[in-house]
Length: 272
Image 1 (tube, helix red, strand yellow):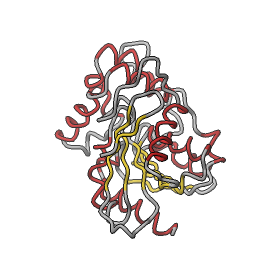
Image 2: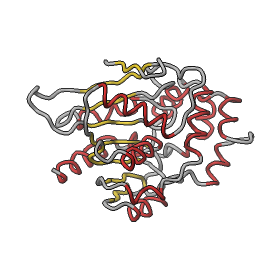
Image 3: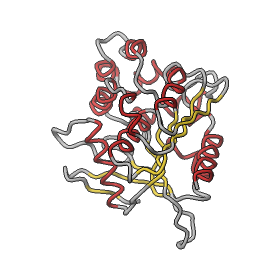
Image 4: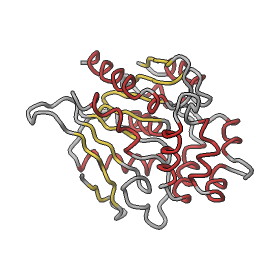
């Protein structure tokens, strides 16, 4: 799998799923994981997506198989977006369908507003316009901030204590819950803390009118983070639509991966 060297010297790992004939050239798909997660969170989507599209799944710096951020690196929407633009340029991907989960959706919105020629459409899973204040307080545990809690407890233990807010534990089996905790625990506390600080203060609503690409929003209707914001997001977007999963909380990308992937594929077919 390719590794893309950034100007800072660190490299980003990108999983490529390509099962098409060489002469088939549909718009490629870029799949961006959420906060402190990695490309493996998309595994169960791939059978449906890869039937018709080449898919590219980068790990952000500090996550998955990518390098750790170099000394002095600052996590901001711009620097994270620059990682993805470097991946697109290195792999000669002029224009992609974006699939993003949680903060991965937020990154896609920033890029679609700033570089509309690069983003053909967006499928956003569990993506809020902003993190609600009561969730911020919950994520902080007994510390001042969520980032302090991650450094104090470690990412895995912090994730275990707050898991019900990013994964519907009533719908998820014990194996899935344990796997999510283990995978997020692979992200070093300082990296996770810096990424969380980056996204905690973001509010995407002001930039949504500049996102001209079609957007499909996927969310459980009982998500404590995202469900209440989905219609506001769709209304603020020039071309937004919502598909809610009745009776589901947060984490529909993991709880209903086949349904999500098929919804994305149908969305792209309709655009074509």
